[in-house]
Amino acid sequence: MSSIALQGLISALLLSAPFLSQAFFATAWVAFVPLCRAVDKQESLRGAGVLGWLVGFLANLFGFHWLVYTISVFGGFPYIVSVVLFVLYAALQGVQTALFALLLKRFGYGPLFLFPVVFWVAIEFWFPFLFPWHLANSQSSVISFIQTADLVGAYGASFLVMWCNVILARALATRKEGSTLPWVPALICAIGVIGSLAYGHLRLGRVAAEIKAAPKLSVASVQGNIPVGMKWDPQAMKTNLAAHVKLTRDIAGAQLVIWPESAVEEWLPESLPQLPREFIDLLELKGAHFIFGARSFSGTFAGPNFKAFNTAFLTDTHGRVLGRYHKQVLLAFGEYLPFSSILSKLPAMPFADGFTAGDGPRTLDLPGGGKIAPLICYEDLMPELSRAFVRQTKANLLLNITNDAWYGRSVAPWQHAQLAQLRAIETRRTLLRVTNTGATTVIDATGATVQSLPTFTGAVMNANVELLEGETAYVRFGDWFAWGISFISLAVVLMYWKKNSPA
Image 1 (cartoon, rainbow, N blue to C red):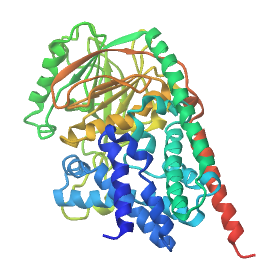
Image 2: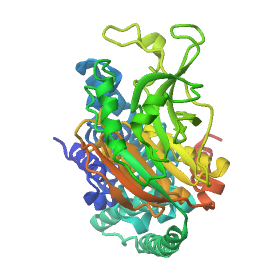
Image 3: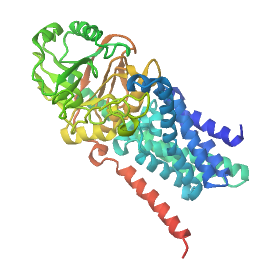
Image 4: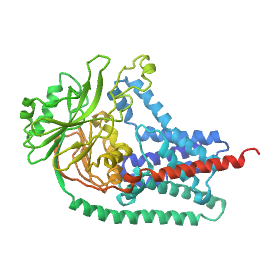
């Protein structure tokens, strides 16, 4: 293996490590150093782009290795097809770091070595991810450092982590060349990191006081622990439902009982007004309201007007349906088939008409002021959804219901929670995650995981969650920082293009 390829492999390993275990958060601060050094040695743009792509490709292979199992089980594809699709996915996601390497090679480091930093943040902002991730997510265990998310989203922390990488890469280069070390950018970056930590310390204290003073909602979250092999099996539906019912009947004193995504496996009419009386009597809700996930439909089965939805229903203690929310962001290859007109013609490819996306943020409202923002499956990875719920509907609690059994016994359930953590900080709302097999957790408005259940265990998590009000700067102004960085990146490209274009 050549030294250049080895540097690419090291970068990929260092980049993926914090997403496999939060204990490796420090590797993100140096993950791009080998890549930057290797790009500097490349003689052509093509070589730099291929090297950058290789790093992204390998990092996705390592970090999201569990997707092979998920594509196979959730999408219904044969295992070999799942492997091919995953490799294609990783190859496409590798374009992100290929773009970074190309821009670095073409435009260099710029004043204070900021060009690669602004390029990276712009790419993070615009690149189409299946599972959105940022460098900031690698610092999920350093709570004080990522508190700037309530100002600038994930991009402030990503900016500083990447800047540190670039400065270290240049320091190694200048030391080898015998040049002066980059003390000025290093000092400014250090001030930025220290300032971020100081801001985080200040905000942690203030948000903790708000959490303590906020009204609480007593919630019982049911983790049914239904094995993926039993899910959607017609012969197992009653057994699966009974597992949730048994756990629910033992609940006492909760104001709200929550079941995860698709806990009810039968198709329900979208306009369902009331749950069956015998079912409600069986649950023994004891005065609690009830949220559960199910597949719902409108129109006539197999008819031209048929629509399917991934839905969260809210009922009162008597089973009267008070609200519903349809999932807005559907999962490719699971809930819809991209390019279905083409792919469905391939052998061994399941055909699916797919689900229909919901029409906007709709809270599930409780008597007494609880306005719950339901986020189904991986919708808690989309900052724009949580922001829209808080901004437009004044939601005071984020609720993620999901069935992460599709991930198997892997790091993925905890990785999902890690990537969702920033939603709590960005909006300063508690994020309650209710899952089928785990990780069922409470992430408070500081981003700290304050309560959780063991994975792959049938259990109930009783928690008092805060109903918080107010708007953060991020909720109010959105991705102003990422937009600004994007315009700077564009200006750099246009300036250099104009400067080097023929007169």
